[in-house]
Length: 212
Length: 185
Image (cartoon, rainbow over all chains, first blue to last red; front, side, top):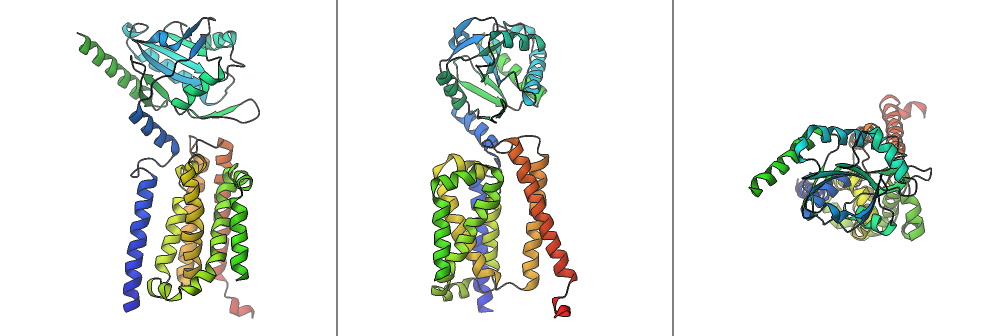
C-alpha cells in the first residue's frame, strides 16, 4: 500500500513532466514541425527585407528597394524543379487572378525569386514567365546573382534550400507578403489559394481606407 | 563495472562530432540508430548507478510504471519531427538529446523493465507498435516535408523504417500470445 502510494506520486510527477516537456517542445501543442514553428516566429519578428539586387526575366537589374511603397507578394523557386515549384507558381497565378486588377502594379507587385541563379538566367526565367502567363511587370520573375545577398534573404525569410546532389533542391514553400515599409507581414500556406487572396485583399483595402 | 565502461565508451563514441554528424546526416540513422544507441548507452551505464541508489528506486519506482512512463514520454518527445530538426539546428537541443535519452530513457528503462509483469511488458510493446505504425504512416503519406533539414526521400525511408519495425513488433506479439515456451522444453 505504502509503496504503491509512492509509485502513484512518482507517476503523477512523471506524467506532468512529460506534458510540460511536450507543451514546451511544441509551443503549446501548436507547432509539431519546424516549419510551423518557423512561420510563427517569422510573423512575430516581421523581419525587414535585406537589400538585394534583382535581375529579372527582361534582363533589367535593380535593387529590391525599387518596390518600396508597394506591397510585395513573393515566392521562392527554381525553374528546373519538377515537383512543388510549378504548383507553387500555378497557385500564385490564381492568387494574382483573384485579386482586383486595380491594385496591380500600383499597390502590389508579384515577385518570383529564383534561388538557383546559375541555371536561371534571364532567358530561362523569361520562358518560365510565359508558361505561367505572368506579364513581366506587375508579376516579375527574377534571380539574385550575388550569392551572399541571396543567402541573406533566404536566411531572413527562413527558406531552407538543400541541394540533393542531382541538380534538384528540397525546399520549404510559402507565400510571403512584404508590406510597404519592407517588413515581412504575412507567411501564408501556398495550398490555400482563396484564403491567401482574401487576406491580401483585406490588407490592401485596409491600406486604401487609412490613406483617405 | 564492465558494463558501465562499455556504456560510457559507446556514449563517448556517439558524442564524437564526425560520428554524430554521420548519424544525423540521414533521418533514419538519426532516429533509428543514434537515438536507440544513446538509450542503450544509458541502459549500460546505469546498472552501477541503480545499485548505488537502489532504495530510492525501490521506493519511487516500486512497480516500474513511473519509470516506464518516463521512458515512453522521452521516446515520444524525440519522435516529434520538430525536435529532430531542432537537434540539428540548435546546440542546446543537441545537448538535451544527449542528456535525456541515456539518463531519462535508458536508465528508467533498465530499472523498470524487470519490474513489469509479462502483461505490462506486452502492453508497452503494443503501444510502441501502434505508435510506430502511426509515425510510419505520417512520414510516408505526409504531403509536405515534415523536417526542414532533410530531403523528402529521407522522410520516406524513415516512414518505411517505422513500418518495418512495427511489423517486427507484431510478429513478436503474435509469438508471445500464441506460443507457450514451456511446451517445447
